[in-house]
Every structure is written in structure tokens, then in C-alpha cells.
Image (cartoon, rainbow, N blue to C red):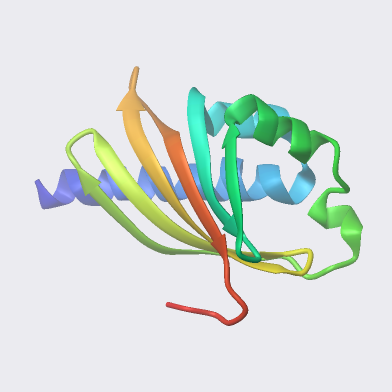
Length: 130
């Protein structure tokens, strides 16, 4: 069980790095669509303002903003934790982009042998948390 869990954790980490982080950095909506389930909901707060969107609304925002790679502002990303139980998982990640320090909790479900984000919780904090 531990070996399979470690293997699945590695697959999720690779998807986060190659699809989620890379997609956000480059503003690549098609890459982001590969990791998100089409019915994903996104909730959270940004600078204490409530945030709630459906995936298409979120991706529309990504496609209509200056990509972090072109913004001239720092971009940092890191995976803080991944917890896998059977066909579900939760990843805690940190992203510094634009003038924001985001923490995301990404819920995954393994569907058709692929790990997909089915829910994203996000918040901006002024300092780094671990």
C-alpha cells in the first residue's frame, strides 16, 4: 500500500509541476484544462474578498490577464504536501505571483486513470506559512 501511495503521490506531483504550475506561469489555458475536471469549482478569498468561480470563469480570467512569465514580477511555486487515499488526494501548494502569496488546497480524484483537480480552495496571505 505504501509503495502504491508513493507512486501515486509522485504522479500527482508531476502533474502539478508540469500542468498546473507551468500552465499558470505561462497563462496556458489548454494545459490547465488537462489537469482540471470540467466541473471544478474554485472558492476562497483574495485580500479578504470572497472568491467563487466555475472552471470556465476562472480559465477566462487566466486567458485575459498578463501571464506571470510576462509580468516582470516574481513567480515561485512549491508543493508543500500531498496526501493520497485510494482514488482521492489533497495537495497543498504555494504560489507567489504578481503581488500575491497564494496557498491552494487542490482536491484530486483519479478518473479514467488520470488524476484531475475537482476542487480548488485558495487564499492570499501576506507572509509565508508552511
